[in-house]
Image 1 (cartoon, rainbow, N blue to C red):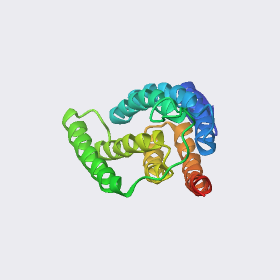
Image 2 (image 1 turned 90 degrees about the vertical axis):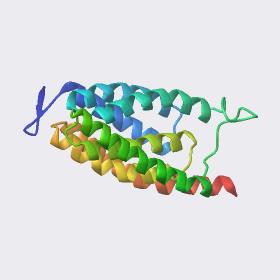
Image 3 (image 1 turned 180 degrees about the vertical axis):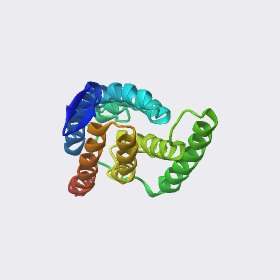
Image 4 (image 1 turned 90 degrees about the horizontal axis):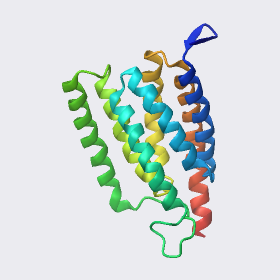
Length: 198
């Protein structure tokens, strides 16, 4: 533990937050190293979430870790591409919208029930809701749809609260920064999508 501005911050929380900062900048830019940073950040947050008692979010980090391999292959054109070229920015087809909303609601209810039944999570509803949004957002991110930012815009404030109340102050501050990048990412990715579409 180290003390920064009177807050006791664990080294792993601080390192995870620094990696997370590079991660969000890379996601915003749709950078080449984005998925590699996602792998690294997910590994750190598996530890941080489980030690903080956020078991659904910790499990989501395992999911994110695995999805990073999938996303890397999709973005590089290895999967879902006949010509094996880098995946362009896309837009979520309207036929998926209700499926996405239903998935978020059903996953939230299931995770809330499961975490409540297990009695391990400090805030089962918030933990379940943020996890459900993260599952869906990560899948949308792998598709390179600009609308994935809406999910992150909703989930980041929830994560700020969860990390703050658990004493992971560096991660809480990181997620405030994430929220700013999410808004910027929404604008940037939509603009890139519209430019590529022309």
